[in-house]
Length: 255
Image (tube, rainbow, N blue to C red):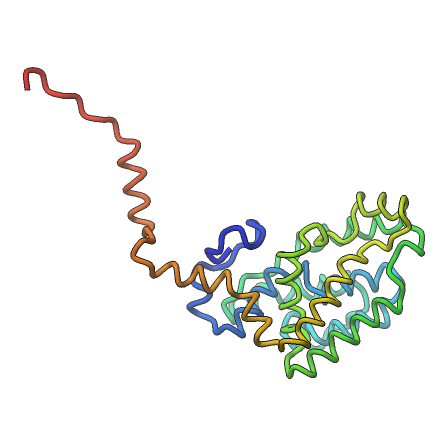
């Protein structure tokens, strides 16, 4: 991903020259699109829907996505299905307009359908409380305002941290999470919400700019490495493979 091997999942691909085309601030937003499934705006919308808060919270989340151009400004959005419909209509157009990777809405929809089906097997006490969900959303908005950043920018920084630090939490509701909740009484997705809270603590303590810079470090290193004299070009790698597979020449007799 962006040439930064081992930092984030291999399936999240970025254009190879995105750092050259985007400023550091915009790079966070680009990565936030790629890492959208780990973003609080996506996770909290899903949690709100399964917990019966959809009509209250999802329109607020959708408003932030509208500001980003991810959903049309005149769209009515009160459920996760409507969120996905809105993302589907605008994803390709936004990607072409601002040189970002398009959202993989098909995968998001498949994940949401699985989450909704699994949520039906849970007792209400196993799901996050309304106070937990709305409290985190209110804090995310408050911290974004305090840092003079959009909610999507702040959410994107949290998403990058989540992918790196809590890979098991990306699918916040799964068969294993249901089994664990049944045995221990833990709230499914609770660890993910706690991580968001801790990350917001870090953002408040060191500031958004410093925190975002730290999250981008793997990509900055990868970009710098592209200019290293020791870095092989694609042509050099290709020629090396050709030489390596070429049959060795036979020695001439008598010579």
